[in-house]
Image 1 (cartoon, rainbow over the protein chains, first blue to last red):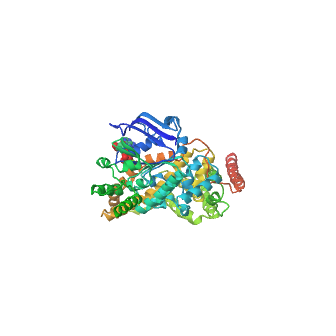
Image 2 (cartoon, each protein chain N blue to C red):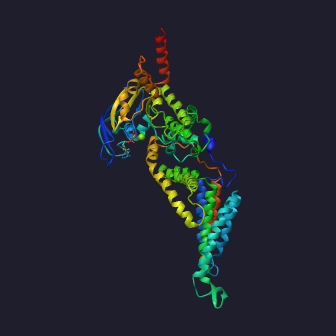
Image 3 (cartoon, rainbow over the protein chains, first blue to last red):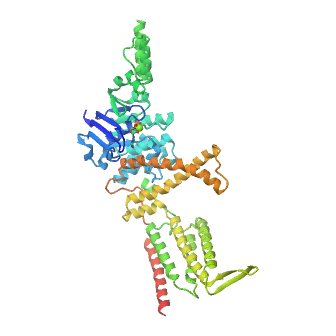
Length: 286
Length: 268
Ligand SMILES: Nc1ncnc2c1ncn2[C@@H]1O[C@H](COP(=O)(O)OP(=O)(O)O)[C@@H](O)[C@H]1O
Ligand SMILES: [Mg+2]
């Protein structure tokens, strides 16, 4: 699989900041993979997303050392329009992502396509499809500001997905949502995975990351302290020292091992836990 | 199908005219009013005063009379106030009307003041009411997209439309915050001073919230290709109703007649 994004020794400081928000980070993002980004508050997750999307330094200014490559070409050589077509970006607060100039959900979703000058018939078709996918088609005629938080975040996702970007950067999409809203957003995110989009997702709910991600980046104080396959990362107890939570099942697995139970591996999802324990019981029974 | 659905159709021939045509009509009316205002009888702008009847009739014909009347009341009150103030305060030689209040304190209405007051108040009334007619028969987005088609920058449309929507949202938010303040025991009802004291702290979170969010808003627009330089599509379209030519011919003809009348009155 091809590398779509690469960071080489990237250090980035916001203007006037006394220390860098991202320090010497090198990473590769491969096509079609799903990446989870974790780390405690202020560890630089959002900043990393801004760098990957090209907002930092072009919008935020500040100083960037090292190289950021998109499809092998330096980020600075792309213009904003191209970037918008390659990469979708969904923010934390759904309310702020509503354009504020459209009176129906349908038009709100269509906004991006209008900006790119897509013909009306094609817009209608694509908007209808995306609204079905994100389950907001029944809200098409409602005013965007009248939706619930969960519905607004699905609208935010829809209005970016409709542009059909190859890469989606999603920053804590559920932090403002109740469990029900969270679930509805993750349903969409799982669709992205099925569609083999490249996804970079910042999410506090590590159990959900364990479920969906392929690989994980762990940030601490602006440094990439661990990255790689989700099983390797999410079972690493040393991360607990950096304020990173591990999935409940991984914690359970470690405890069971400590008690002397012979688990063949540390599970990170419920399904894996059932598997592991099932096999354990089977072995014991023999 | 959505393009059809979003189209704004009004079931009234005048209200349904293209926004820019209505804007032209309003501008020509304002021009006529100004011209008529220069023709005076005994120093009073009688013709211009008579013209004030035109807009209510236009509103009636446009099928918005009730809505119009609400705004008109406000305009009328304001103009009446201006008239009274001017008539009483601007002194001139001739007193039109004077009456004794008590002792030898008299209130005088001076001719010069009355003339100036009528001039100003009827000018304001005429122009404010034609604008009221225009905005009541035209939705904001119709006007904005019609202007954008004429070459106005999409950024200007955005600022205009989002500001109007934001005002609505802020009103809603401030009501929410006020209710919260009230629930915490802060007095939000009562006289002006009490209300101001409650209002100011309630504005702080509101304004801070709006400022803190602009960064995300800008980047979201960027993510949706707002600044891409290409011809934008508009699903929402403003289209002429077909009666624009007739309407313009009528409006221009009336304007020409007014001009001719003015010139004749001048020459003869
Ligand atoms: N726009 C900004 N300007 C200056 N400093 C910022 C800005 N955004 C974040 N920072 C700083 O950069 C560091 C990393 O923040 P952030 O990337 O938002 O972390 P996270 O998303 O993991 O919570 C923090 O120390 C934060 O204060
Ligand atoms: Mg963040």
